[in-house]
Image 1 (cartoon, rainbow, N blue to C red):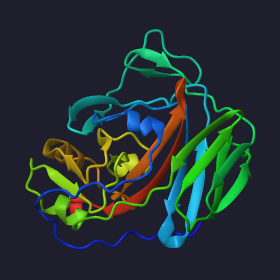
Image 2 (image 1 turned 45 degrees about the vertical axis):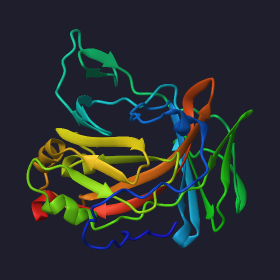
Image 3 (image 1 turned 90 degrees about the vertical axis):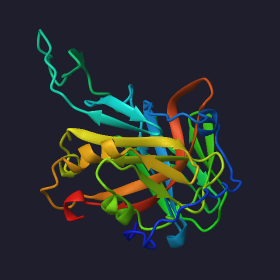
Length: 283
């Protein structure tokens, strides 16, 4: 996989009405969500990520017996975004083994599963994908044609359409850097897709280096061409730890998601990322 450079964007953010989402393909899980954000986490997630400018696609993910263990909890929600934070918790008696104490309850990390060889097909190729020694699944290939991507797990087949990245309307770094404290930030893009979803996660240098940040922002919702992030959330993120290098890079993921109608524990997503950079200590 070649290194994908940061997407260059124009300066300035335009006001006015949002563009009308263009018709696009869809997938059953993402279509069913409606207008509300979806912060749920499946047991297992496979993602096909597209870079059509580079004619590349990659499939990655893993399977587990439970959803990921999350140490942070939601503290506030506004619109399509929420603020999550972490506070140490104590369990009596103490947790055994690798279990951790979350909200005064001992919780176990999920166990990865070997579900055998997967079948993955897309308009430009078809592969059998086996797990590696850590039970992670990964494969890549060339992609120049739009269309559906299909994942076969045993007798289950899930299909999702390909998707292109959001094209920023203005420079998102400037939008975030030039806002007054307490002011909301509106990230806009010019090519929304009907029935697609967007997802964004923002953390400070502690979170970027594998630690637990005191405040992080998570956003998810329908692709309207705009994502509004509350000023109070950005204040708390900006007040975090920015004293390390290699942080401040973020990705907005536009995606479709498919799941078994009887069980959404496994989801197959098709997504494309828009990268941007923001460090409040350098604004």
